[in-house]
Length: 87
Image (cartoon, rainbow, N blue to C red; front, top):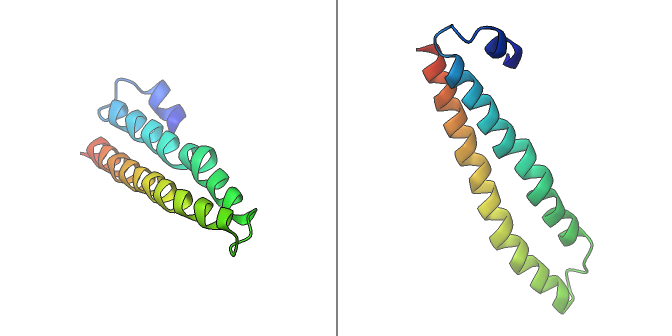
């Protein structure tokens, strides 16, 4: 898909296709790897019954939900870009 964008810049929708691909790649797998997975790992490493576990959970809840919203929004924006590429 991306290779087609680089070799077919003159085709209509190429910029939308590239924008959608970049937005999706940065907003979903990269955000997951950089933010969500470390938060999950930190939560899995603590005893849930400890005071530290409660603190880690509170941080996890606020941070993980925020980054999950970023993933959802970037997926929607990428989808809109792909739709614009089709139009």
